[in-house]
Length: 432
Ligand SMILES: [Zn+2]
Ligand SMILES: [Zn+2]
Image (cartoon, rainbow, N blue to C red; front, side, top):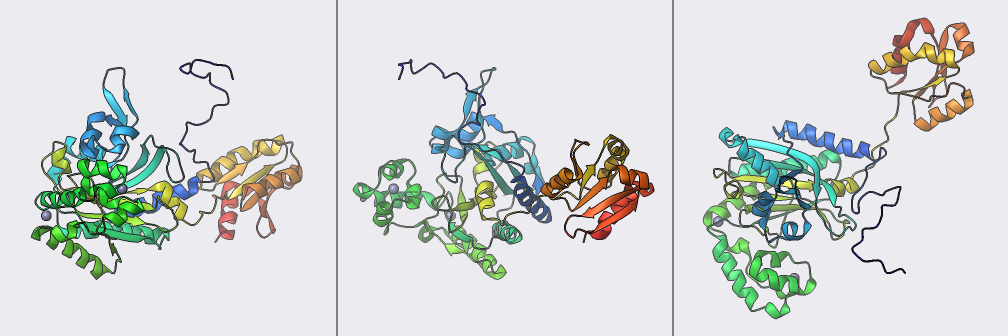
């Protein structure tokens, strides 16, 4: 190996590949994405949610404040850059911060109850592995204003309905209550005292978290940490009366609607503005990255970001993970493939093809009028088209077009004088 200085950038080698950890979504895959998005949009509209679209980048301090300056996301995973004006900006690593920023900035707080949803790409510089991409997609919901337990129940009901509508039915809803500004500090003090006694049994991460973020020790996945922390105090046993009452009403609401859940007293959120209800939907068979949707109450976030205090609750679901659980979407299928034999046939049909598309039919075609009928039928077959429209010298002379049923092999002659309308009618009459 030649000893090049390590700092010299490698010259680009063409053709270039996409950046590491990102993924192209190709036409064969987009039908599944579009179906998921359409099901979400339809259901969210029925729940009274409005769509919000916030920028892909925000001033860096927004994320430091909302996600926490000492979290892995902000410390290690954000794509942060200084723009030409000298401002520090970051690609959004999640959606809530930008939504709450916009909520405050545009005075949506005045409306009392605000229901929002968003969908789009998020960016984190993580080690690429199965189920983790550096550009990944989330669909999220935020409901701001009332702090009633009925809001929590409605948000969870919406998610249950969404998974139903998508045909995903083996998910587990894990539920916990994580307290408020009144009951959590004394609980965290009790937890910290218990963890102090266990220090030697904890993993290196947890020894650090014990000081910076003791709640997160509870959801450490390292088996020895699980074992060591078996007997530590749990927040559910330390809730104040208001938090305990809220949790009881959320559970009663879910019970009343027949929405199953598992209590997970170790389900926590690391940041102070998270309050009360916390939840995750997990899927068996996704391995270590088994969380499909995660969310909860954040009654103190709006205030934390400089707005008037407003309770809120929300969730985000991981699109790529959810897609792996969905049944495969059938590929898009054109209604017609136009096999045009010869330049005269092509010229004659150009306005007709345009009218057929205007009438709502999906029309595919090739661009080589010298290709044989056999070759064009082969392409029609490959396109998956339901019908093949055939026009050659014989048909031109006879004043007809042929409509070949690609499923049933029947062939209809349609008078050319009927134009696009006659063809569209024949296609519609034969398509259920
Ligand atoms: Zn409380
Ligand atoms: Zn640990």
